[in-house]
Image (cartoon, rainbow, N blue to C red; front, side, top):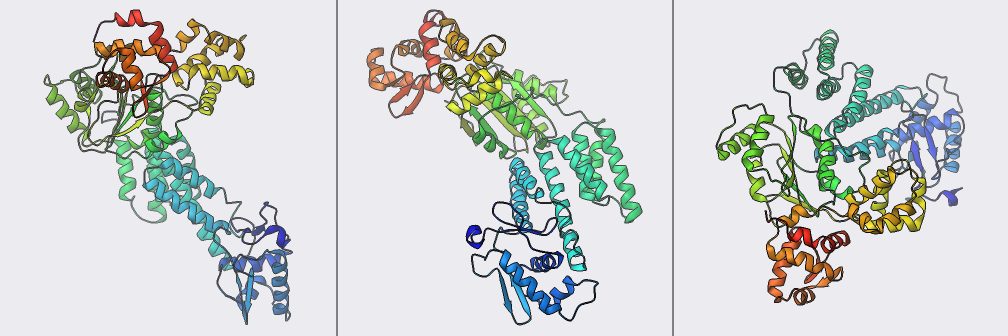
Length: 577
């Protein structure tokens, strides 16, 4: 058995009935109750010497201690040594005159694992990453299989079990706090209801419950929860509610007399797929920051911003604003945008001066925690007057243009999806008709046609979903036609209209070059010196109509190349904005 198990791989379980398991998860046969009690007593003091008298007292708790007790204890120790694999550092159970010691390596005891996960979860929550905290706390709570040291008598076991039960309640309360921070309000309410039932004097749980019910729009329930908590504290402890609980009550109490916060976020994206790295970064975005998502049209900037905003919304209880700046269609002026935002805060008399509007907006946000999503920004001049001053608010901005920057911004350029991400998005967007999507060649053809562009994948999946008699092969055939490719091609008119006349000509002319080309080739094709050609290429790159994978190298997305090649005449005649 020892060679099969190896050393240092055993895991002791005390969060429930005391057990020892092998690496495969099988429970080791420790024998009758008394050997288990000996092991549990040693686990109360891992890596410490435990006196023989202490072990005998625990093993024969409230029983007459036999004359053979010490000899019997040696028998139990021998059995444990046979069953338990050795520790990496040597013998699993050491002995010396009058005492024994159980070696427990880091990670071998479930209670130690819980402590490590709890510490990491609290650090993640303090660092603004509630989703990681939720994962860690859920894993920590999953270790419990019942009350710690279940069925073992004795004051030592009961005291240890009480301490671990308190740890369990603290983890549940912290999990609810993380869920509130992540916007998972209903889940938090469920945990907090259970906590306040199990431990009615747990004031922190009552405080979180009042806040959670208020955040969920259940004001009457929030006020009722406060009254119940106040009565419990007065009757059992003779104390008044803490300042934190009183503040939560005051916020719920005054909800009807204050302007209700705006909740303007569009509906979240069902089955949102991919962008894991960007979402993790956005989850950690600090209050007071400005985050810019840039990328080509159709790459999913708005979808990501909306999905991230829903995840962040609970951290910004004073409102979530969503404003389409229409930067590439009919751009909002800063004055019009500010008027719209100020009306959202309840202002009816809007200052006529744009600078005064911006000052009033900054003043209002200085005392609020607001999430501001500015979609399809044209440039820095359009956005700058809308930014909060020093405050606890967060601004998310999307744009098709990367040729501008804001002071102190954090920018995430969105790239195309990988093949696996594309397949996952397509399966999700196509709905329940997943079986026909397993044919490799047709699916590969569809994904190739979409070329990693989320908008194209959604368009293709929608066409398949609304045609129940079509197979993936039928869809692939359709996408091979001009009309099919037109359905996938992203709308570039808005970006095109913001180009100079020379860049417009270059946009169509370069569509006849290979998908990836060098500056020298482009200059020859355009009939321009390289410095002039580079200027036009950089303009196209700034508008995400070209990509620059390396110095002096440029690349066109196949759907944009196709659109540029086949729509040269109508686009070239478009009015310059």
